[in-house]
Image 1 (cartoon, rainbow, N blue to C red):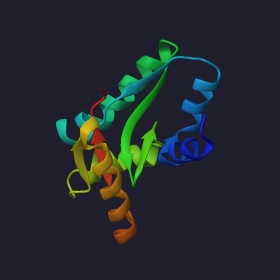
Image 2: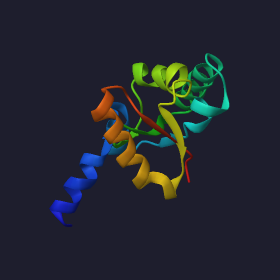
Image 3: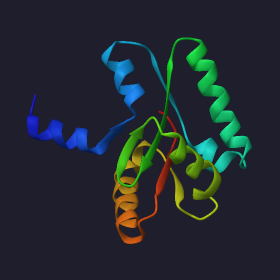
Length: 129
C-alpha cells in the first residue's frame, strides 16, 4: 500500500467515531443517502425520517452512517448538529447541492472552497451508489 495515497484518502474521509468503531470490530454499517434529507422532504419531516431510520438500524444491530460531502470531505456518519444543519438550513439557504458519484470531485472542491470563503458548512447531498 502506498502511504502517500493512503494519507490523502484518509484526509478526504471523515468517519464518525461510532462508524469507525463498528468498522474496526467488523460490525455492520449501513450507508444512508442525504439527498432525501436536504431536497426530498421538508424540515422537520426529514430529521424525523433520519432519526427513525437510525433507530431501526440500531435496533437491528447495525450502525447507521449518513453519507454527505461536507466542507471538502466525505463525511461517513454525521454528528447531530451537522445533521440538523443539513436538514433545517442548508438546502433552504443554498448551501446544499445534490451530487452523485460522478459529481464527487467537483463537490469536494466546491464545498471546500465555499467553506474557506464563508466559514459556513457547505454540503453535497449524496445518493448512495
